[in-house]
Image (cartoon, rainbow, N blue to C red; front, top):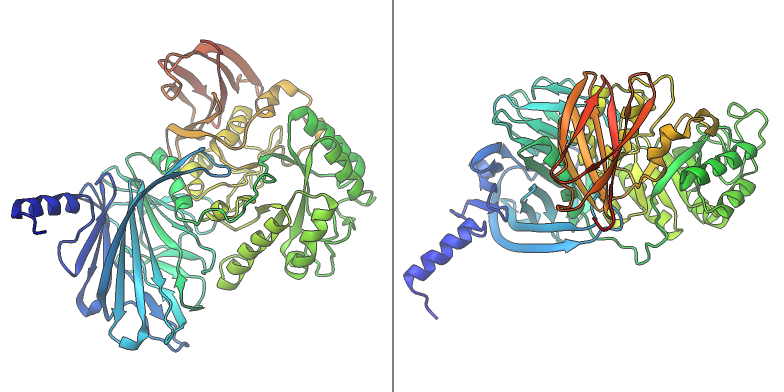
Length: 621
């Protein structure tokens, strides 16, 4: 059937604005479903692949080079020039999926995808595909090598993904996952930047460069170039076999910084669905560390956990000897005398007592024992009745150890063990595929006692990558922040395993009313809203569990008075607001009021202060 000319023109117009056609053979584009974001790919002089990203026709990423350069010691040439377009395909997806746990109970996965197959001028090299997805929340793209029988070996030494930023862009920089953040211009960095890297553009747009599905590839960081660009820097070389797909490079785009956190589910969308058929044993919850490494101390902690609705107790470093000694055997209980000179820890009895009270046990194991004993530890701990393992000081960065670490999480799932990874590991969405990875560190948390300004930066930077184990303290004299600030943090900071009272013992909390907000606090949520805030200033986050909302607000080292809109509440309903805030004397004050979605909740925040609020739906009202 031959369509009339006017019909053809109308069809082309509709497809173009849906992001499903290209303007020219050597310049291809894909648009987000709402038409706002635009990814443009082109081949420049000498066959150099480039891309750019626009938000409502305003630049987010200016034209920037793509590609993979050759390993000088390898057998292959690079994939950063001499390329031509071989074919193009497109798909559209619009689905919703339900995570095992998360910051929301339903996640929208809606995008337009462009797949560009490229051939090198050396015809026997096979093909490289650039896969680009345009979401309403951001742009993602990756390099992928289809299977090639003639050229199976892939060998490259560096990634040449560039990010050319608009003039006067500012970046929230840290050079390692557990570092402090600084606002910097993207030029002259002595060290490369850790991902995610949050950007503030001069026109008011916010963006964040992140990555997803980094499970079989070295870590990348972003280094500045002499001409003011950012370029990906690999931890080490890569030698692989086709078919092989690299991690996703992600650029989230938002009108306000809080939208970056609200839309961080994009990282999970870019990972495969869960491979576990039975997930009933994966139980999020609150955790408290047993610091005495004694049977009596463990039982006392279990009793406190029962009273305070804490789901897990955790035995930290030292229960099987000195964690750094290669001879320490994590299949035996041999208490490090530097931790407990008496060595009076009957771990089987402690586990039995905890289980009899409905509490679960997590054991810490340093990487040295994990690397030697991994395949024997997991089945042994399952027989002991242990529910989880905290990996300590794992190697990160290299291709080898990245593969090893994610394989360890897979093996743990076979023995129904949940995992918490410390120290420099930062997530890229693997918990969607293996949700027994409940959390990880990769954050400058309360072990380092950062100030309140640092804490206001984290929701807009590190937490875009996913959950983080901050190890919250309370009643700890080394803290720089108020009690109200500390109470609010577990609402603002997402982690399915929330470690509370990190340096404490049960006897350190004689005033139970001060910690009552944490007693029934969930650790996973049905919905999340960032009410307001900006990095380095303040932040307010609301999270829903069932019919009730929890609201956490903190300020920097500067005092602040704000009125928080409650328009996220269900219209026409009334809620009882239980507010926990600083009273000005170093204690926590609790006040109660009735509110609706039309109200604004006042918060007078002391310097380094905060407010934690439970908004409980009134039944029948």
